[in-house]
Length: 277
Image (cartoon, rainbow, N blue to C red; front, side, top):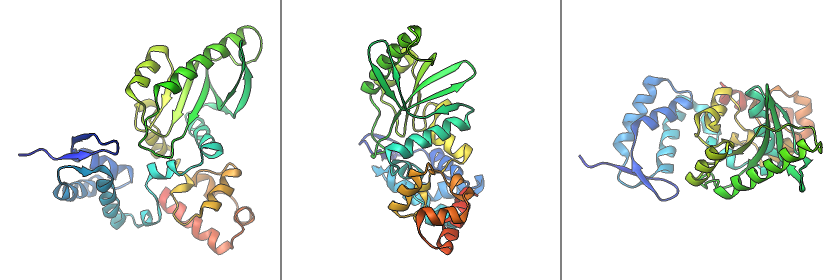
């Protein structure tokens, strides 16, 4: 039997894997039996060279029949790419690290031995003190490359020297690169060699951004189709970047921020609750 290949966003081909369809469905909180049924249906419609985004669209259409709330939601990966790099995605990474038990301090300027450095954040847990570098790509299929990790390693070494000289009070133990994309093979090899930790899309499992979002229900507000762009930006300016935060805020406060009616606020909250389940 001829093997059916799918074409990824970067142009590479790989064999169609029915198990990936099942995993995607279950991440959208579809039960195993229904996920198997959807996978069977998708398996019959795929053809050699089918783009992965066509498969994802077909999955969403089937999932909407079971979970109609997704009619009002963007795909998670797309929603993350729709966030502003600063401050929204930086806030989002801070919230994600907090959900893992880290105490997070926001962006600041810290003196190294040679120069001062503007860093995106500091994450602390037990004996760990991580220098956090946040990288956001509008195109979610772009790879975060080696240049980022080379620069981060250089900055970390200068900051460690700065601490030893008493120029700041953070005893950094490692660096963490947090991004919304996958990481190039060269970047991954280098990171492992020099001990830089990284949070990327689906890999590695310990810091896989997609898994962390679904596990802790850290869905971004950009998933909501009902929210206009200026609504997203107004909320982001107040540090509100997840659906959890959105539903917890008082209606009067949201009315003040978004300058829309209470009825519209309640509709937004209802759709957010539906996605959160």
